[in-house]
Length: 505
Image: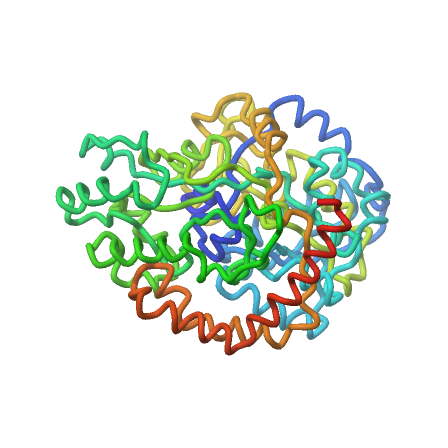
């Protein structure tokens, strides 16, 4: 749970795809009642527990940098789950950048998998549910997942249905998504700067200029290849140029590269790049984790949640503050930001659901999976609070990807009512334009593949400000249109109009 783990907030928004340190989730804890009420659900259907039957081994594939102690921790997990539900667990971690491709190969080959991580941004949940990679879980939830359905905000399960069925268990975490500017407070204070009036990309300029002048060894705006400037649009598919403006009641799908907001954002980014505020290698930089470890950066963009500043500060070992650049809205990508699915090929679907129910309701199991072995990787300091021990570097997990975060331990400095605050935050979330609409790409799958291919060459250079949009934007738009973007847009509009009519919008 070291640096990466605690800094891992924000992957609910797929705009942070593959950016490890913008992941969504935090290391948190159960606050008394939560833990107790949850624990009462965790003995459901313990069919093999306590009997002499041979325990079932569940193969769990999940995303994240493979950890040295994962087998050691899973041995401890298995001792616990063997008693509780008559099952043991083998976890295979696949690195962030490799996850999509490797999971596609494993699924196609019929590999022995029981549980797999999926999301809007990794091993595409909707697409793979439609392809038949996942087992439908509505009946399994009803029989073995009562703890899950009792715990989750109903928006998670209703918002993640695909063609009327559930195929994944969403992590109980922040529901709305809000983008923020983050700041390294040491550099902010050293330069006596205020973030009170900062919201737009343009409003950053005077601060970046000051830092560039006064701190030549610091990156004023830390950007890598995963960066996308915030614009007030709801994307049809993550990292794909089709979107609907948030306040557009006509639900007109547009190419974001043809919107005035994106054009302005790209011009500003290029201006910042030329001024030396952005890393010269931004368009090819895989992640910002190295520079964040050094503290030699001033500002960046992230996705927030309640008390995120405290999570980030605990993680990096220096203070972080943030200010919003967008409203908090519930997007499909946030509902489907972190999910566990059961493989359609699994021979142990019922047992897999029993395990997922336990994982999402039992604080003992959830904290073991999250933080490792108590006394080895972390220590409990007081009540629900914990601190990392040096060995945590060998078991540094992305909390958001492993289930219900609201029964994990509290970090030093977290308020005791952290999870109550999370629930309030979730309850106050308002739906984004396309929440509940899942585009069916079947009729235009070859055009989507061609557009994905075409955009690879210019997406990161444009988004990071590396190239001049005046010159490259018209070329990018032409490439997209030549690849078939118009056909995709027309098909999506037809589906969206039908959905809008059915919803009475």
